[in-house]
Image (cartoon, rainbow, N blue to C red; front, side):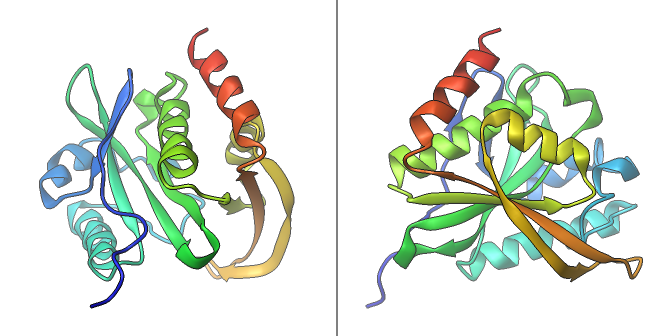
Length: 198
């Protein structure tokens, strides 16, 4: 019998958001907020209509079924509405590391603390619930908003992977890598909690 996966679907509950395992029935709520092109500017996915979003969601669920990703819907607690998504990916159980990525959040929920709290919930689960050694993030080197946010939560910039991806428009993307290690976590947690308590 094969070993159980290291990371299983879980509900992560905060004050502002709840991260819950992504499901087909999140599609309607996500479709209400997903079609602002700026949300997808830096990603390989570019859904412009419900069919495109459904394909994105199905790929996430297929990857979850294959045991290679753990996708979440980001749900606003006050309204119960799905306002975005994020996931655990590039999971290396033998090294106790994974990536947090494919994160997007509705324009109306940006700068509300929702995304910051989602990161806190994910990092807390990773380090305190799963015993991770390292959690990493990557973003387009041109995505200053994302890079500033990662720096803001206390992630460490590690360098640029040059010519890392071919984007839908044919541009060669250089990816900026960041990480939080288990040694970093207490300070990063304190910083995130303080930012959310402002």
